[in-house]
Structure formats: C-alpha cells, structure tokens
Image (cartoon, rainbow, N blue to C red; front, side, top):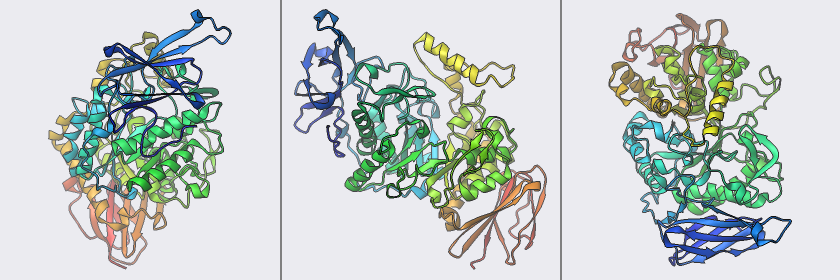
Length: 625
C-alpha cells in the first residue's frame, strides 16, 4: 500500500522540484489508463502499480495545461477487444476544474504560492470567535477576492476566525457547497486555488484564523464520476444523500488514503487553521480504527512537522463525546464539535414554537443545562427521537463546543429561510447574541447576524440536469409538507433565490443596523477583556434558573474575578434575587439607551433584588474576592 507522506501530496498530479510532473491514480478494476493532454494532442500511458494504483512521471506537462484520463474497462466475461469500454474523465484529485465539473482538470503547482505567514504558529482554539460565511453570498461579487475587502470590517467587529462554507468544486456557480464532487478542487467561480491561498494569507496578515468546511460523508450527484474509477462508495450503508463513502468495505484502504490526503492538503498547502467536518454522524465506519481517529493521527504528525496548530471541528448530532475525547482515551481526537442543542434551547427560550426537533426542548431549564453541561440530552429519554439519547460530557473543556444563535443550517433549512432578525424583537436579538458570547464555549456568528441582516438565506443550487433539479424541488416540498402555508416554497434552482440570499451591506448605513453592529462589537470586546468570560473553564460556572419568570443567572469566575449575567427572556420586567452580600458593579445592560433601550445609564444596583427589563441582559462584575 502506498505510504502517506505528510510533507507531500501523492494523490493526483503534483510538480516535482526538478520540473517534472508526477501523477498517481487509483483505479483498481480498469485494464489500462492514459493521461490525456488535449491541447497538446498527447496520450501518455500510465504504469500499473500495486493495490490498484497507476503511475506516471513526465516532463511533458506544464502548469496550466489541461489534462484528464482515458480509462479502459473490460467486460469480465470476455477478452474480446470490442468489449472494451473507454471513458474520458477528469482527475478525481484535481485541484482546479477551470471549466467546471464536466471539464478537464488544470495542472497547477500549489507550492508556488509566495506565503508571508511562515512565522505564524496559529492561535489557541479557545481564542476563536468565529464568523461563518458563504463565499457566493457574502459579497456582491461572491468570490475570495471580495472577502479580502471585508477583512478589516471583521477585525473591527472582533472576529478572530472566519469559517468558510465548502468550496470544493460543485456544479454551476450557485450552491451551498455540500454538492461538491471534486474534494481537492477549489470552486472555479470563487477564484480557484490560488485565490483561496491569497485569501488565507491575507487573513493571517490581519491576525485572523481560517476554518474551512469540508464534506466527507457524501458526494454530490452531478459530475460525480468516482464509480468509473473504483469502489469509492459502498452499498452496505445509506446516508440521507445516497450510498455511503467506502471507509470500511472491500478496497477501502485507498479511499481512506484519499480523504486523509485531502485533509493534509488543506492544512499544508493552503495553510488552513481548522477544518469543520460536515455531519460526521453520517460517516459510516466500523473499522478497528475509525477514519476520524486515523485523520487525527496524521494531522498530529503534520502539526509536529509544520510547528503550526491544526484543528479538527465536527458537526455532530449524536451527543457522543467519544468523537472529541483524546485518542489516548480511545476517542477519535476531534478538537471541538458544534452544539445544536444550545441553539434549540435558546430558540425555544426566546419564544420559537416547539415544532419538529424543537419539540424536545423546554426552554429556560434546558438552556441553563446547556450552559452547564453542553449537551442537553446526556442519557435521558428524547420524545422526538423516541429513545434515550446522549452521554455526559463532564470532562470536556469549554473550547470543545461551538455554539450559536443561528447558522447556515438553522436559517437555510427553514421553509422561507428567515433570519432571526425577522422572527424576534430587536431586544431579543441583543439578548440572544449575549447568551452566545457570554457562554463558556466558542461563539459562532452567521454572516450578517451582527447587524441584523433581513434578506433570507434559502437553499439554492445550479444543477444542469433537469431531472435532478426537479428531484431537489420535490425533496424540498416533501421536507416542508407538515407546514400549512399558502406561500410557495422558494425554487432552489432559481437565480433569484440565490440573489435574495446575498447580504445587503447598505443596511449598515441605517441607524438601527449600525447600532446592532456596535452592540456586537462591544459585547465581543467585553468577552475578550474579562478572564471570567474569555477563559472557558466549565468548572468555574453555575446557573440559577427562574422558570416561572423565564430568567436565569449565569455566574462565571476566574481567579479573583467574578461575572454575573442576569438574562430575562420574558416580555415583562422581572425582579431577580441575587443571593450574595457584596456590592455589584454594572458593566453592561442591553436595555440601556445607548443600545436603543429605555433604561437610564446606571452603574449601581441593590445588593439583592434586581429589576431587569424585558428581553435583556445585565452583566455585573464583583469586586475582587
């Protein structure tokens, strides 16, 4: 079996220091493979290697050349030459599809970029304040170069890490990114691989980390030619998107190799700081070593060699801390996971109806539990799932959990894609933001949230296959069949649906949106400046719940500093009893006049009974104790 070298990518085409090109292709059940250079009218035979690999080293390929493969299949029942089937395909490990998913690959040297971040070690995960964005809708031009123009804005906001939704090549120019079919290739309409490298370098120059969303649980349907090369998929398991990727069936070793190489490429050749692995609960693997654990082992080796921090963050719907426990404790070694349950409890507490998966959440009590325990369900019965669910995560650090009041899924998977700004009051928007940012976890902000963007973020695609487009339309209608609404479900194929999702940056010129932006900036600054908030020690925290008043008190402390956060999610003024004997100093009030509220500025409150405005948060700091 071909060995993985953390220092060099072996899969696909790469340029050697001597100027030659080297190509490795896994195609175990074909009888012949040639590299095609259509513009040069050349066909270069590849040599068969062990374990189904094919190899070529040549001096006839230059950067920017278009190339592909001619693969020859034979009917197993005959050796008749007329039964040989020849296919022309792009490289499954292509790094650039200049002409889209159905075109040839473009030969590029990823090592040729002139990086200026060589001395950057990377920030600690605990310091991440994450801003999730979609390249195509974040700016009017929808490309990497345009993101660079907004970096100063994000730094000013207080963001320390941007998270970019998937950029692996997908059909057309409009897609959330989860229909990618070339995991190594950077979307052509976004600017391609060199433009992504330039963006990452620019982020690092401004002190921003970069998280990239990647998808290892399925491939998109259009332009997916993996089955022509080999058994990349298995019918042993099904995912919501079709057959699972072959991580544990026959011939799985080269498939595992392929995805490990992909992980290493993003860290090594693009200087990405962290990967966010989509829906890892849909990765099916019963090997003695789970693919995530094997990925972690190679990433650890790469970090030791590169002297840089490389993090793996997962989207996980299992409440199983095995995924984020260390390898030494028989975990999979992932560094952090998204916590949807914090979001669900927060939404219900803020007044959203208990429908669908929200039906499992009782509001303020569950929100308090998530503040304290991360998982709401950690072994008890889940009515929505109709079974006991979850396990306790008592020993896991706060930095191992990512929380949010909205994200691309929680907005985009609503029927009409309404952002939170269209669902709750301005005061509640401020309170929900503070609940996330004052939590003992990593906060994530979804693009536009910080100024109250009102444009919807709806699901969109740009497939060329009419039958596939119609299947997606029917799927969306079926998903929302339980909603009795006279409004039409947005057409995911329509360019108008995509254009509606673009941020309206002119909103920032309006007073209320600018006020909310300043509010976010202030509460993020407060989090960073106070050790009791910035140090994510889950042992230095307790929560008091006032169920009948829909309020809670979050206490956090670090060394001699103590912070008390009073949160009122009700629509009435409430009086809360804070049982202590020391004086408090008010340092933040979301209902203050400076934030568009009605409360007069005041820095002192009574020792015990404290009045708090509807849908607001008060933050006190105690004298050093």
